[in-house]
Image 1 (cartoon, rainbow, N blue to C red):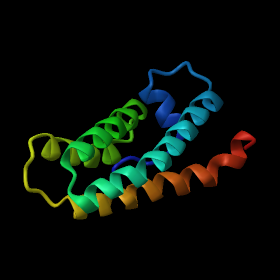
Image 2: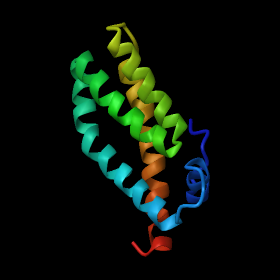
Image 3: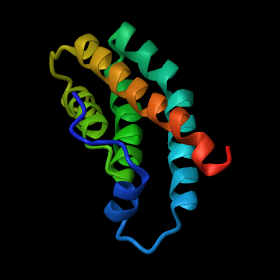
Length: 119
């Protein structure tokens, strides 16, 4: 699913360059933690078809992933957010399953890179 090859240098470039990689990696760590914190609420909302909550959490995750250039993750959040916002029937469960896979790709990449940044 992911079109983005996870690489801190690419995130630095996406952010406009000139930023220390370790700072960017710490920002990615904050993103990973916030996703972990928000996912239970999104999962519960999807499971109960609580569209206002899907919209709210999807919007938040969309914004934070967009800020780091995690395009595949952002797009899935946007799909959830927009359909829920307009109270439309949609494959929320299937899209959430794809989002879980993308989340895992980001987390696995982040965890594999931690030692390179002294974490």
